Image 1 (tube, rainbow over the protein chains, first blue to last red):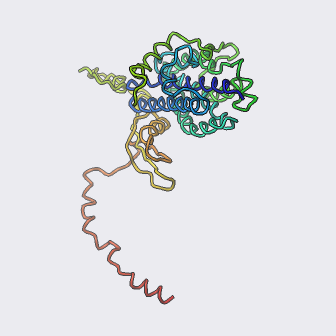
Image 2 (cartoon, chains in turn purple, brown; image 1 turned 60 degrees about the vertical axis):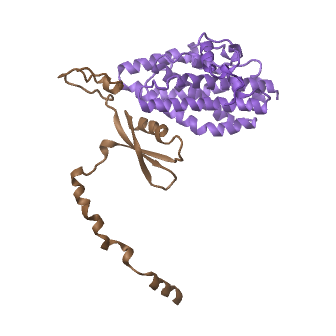
Image 3 (cartoon, helix red, strand yellow; image 1 turned 180 degrees about the vertical axis):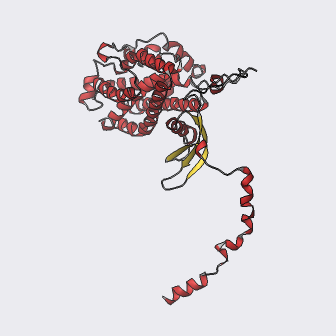
Length: 253
Length: 122
């Protein structure tokens, strides 16, 4: 088992968590009601916690850099997050739909790692289980609530779904170089398998909410992020996220 | 009178239009839910505060982050505040004489002597 393949997978997972966590934290203080502001901010922190745990595995098990340096001073090209998480928050319908689609994808991924041949993944899978259960409970409850509230909210949730689905499918961008090797070694089941598990998870919730999942064979997933090609939105985000750290990268906190 | 409240629930109701009949749409009227926290299995659920929510499911979702983020917790209850029946404040006089009824306390019975005697006889 080659470390390059594992490293590649961990960076993709961790960068998704970090950027999604940062985006969600941008809602802090601006949430629609105080209770939701607190819940959404708290989940954003969980995401950043997930990223940190993954960067630590890179650092401690695979000879990677210190997590803070790795997170805050990497060049944009070296990030491997999906385009979904880079998108600006827009309005709450988009942010909620992204949260729903992303967190179910995250859940099927970490569930699959329970049986991983890479032991640190098994630990993470157990550790994140309860948090992810809450995140998807929260997402499902909001999808149900807003799709049933009134015509406007239903229309907005449906259009958010239509606008987000191709981006979300891009989470599962395959890696020609490493994926086969990781699957053979029993590290994880591969992107295609996770993609189908994800669809099985989101479909019943959408049906219950009377939202129409676009015909997936007509949807072209938005790929590129995993290879370092990003939207114009990532660079400014990284600049802002690393602003304090970069004032003095050797400071002790 | 204009209403400058930042609370979206207030603004949505457009309380500023004096004299206009206010019609509250279904789902627009968020309820207050009381939250009860259980520290370990089998323990009592204890009242810890309240949350605003449109339905019981979201009340639970909010209560979890609001009241069970750090402290140990194994379960939560939520109940709509309006569903709780309580006495009126003016009925407080019903409880006035409680402290004078110490003759009802079980503390006056001296039984240890009898118990010890019984144990010895065994």
